[in-house]
Image 1 (cartoon, rainbow, N blue to C red):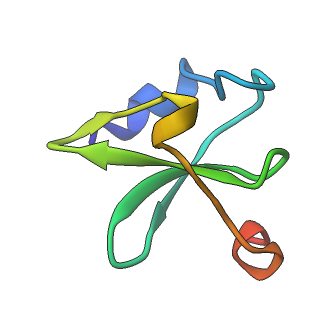
Image 2: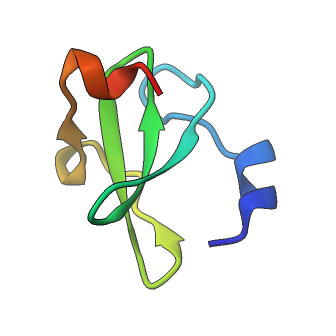
Image 3: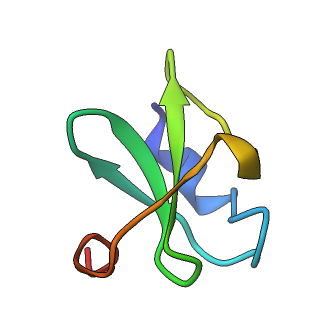
Length: 61
């Protein structure tokens, strides 16, 4: 994923900043909403029903 993209995209729910996070899978995380959006083939999937809710410890990146 092109990290420069993080400068122009935002969370579709709160319009806040997204952070790149690597676990067993690559994701974009919104700390405010505690939600992680998947990245498939280098493309962020910013669809609410495709995201997963993250736990409180995960949200403290």
